[in-house]
Length: 227
Image (tube, rainbow, N blue to C red; front, top):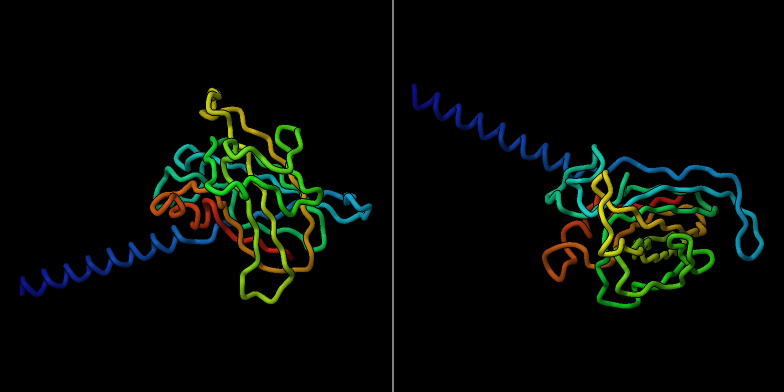
């Protein structure tokens, strides 16, 4: 009888452990909350058209362990991540301006192509108020690249914006971060579609630094819905 009870307890403990592990894995892999672009009147395109305009505020932090409270846990708390979410939603047939604060240092990409700006309305990104068509490779920290799913039957969309890093000698402020680099860019959306985005600068781990956060939603990758 004692052996039977011991076996029963062991099985029950195993069920609880497996169930808890499954719940944790499910919670850790859950899609982050949707960040919806905020309507902001209208704005003119370089070719003179006037379109609805929206804006979105983002930030990039060097590691989740020192990021804002409430950021999703991941396999490694030292991963860099986008905040407040990697699940993004913008309106169709509109201009969208992204204002991003960069708190991370540079991680130069292997390919200088990733330092070029592609897909913004004027072909430029503004870094602390200065316009750039491309960045010096040594100054690139991360990138924001949106593309369509290869098999998707939807409007073609591609956006690549290299993001300037914080200077290596910058000192941390009282909040534990250096003064951020202020980055801004504007792009035009077309008809509704579902896309993915990610950082394509090697800032992860494992093989050639392209693993880990670079493919993990909630960190350096996510979804991009045009609705």
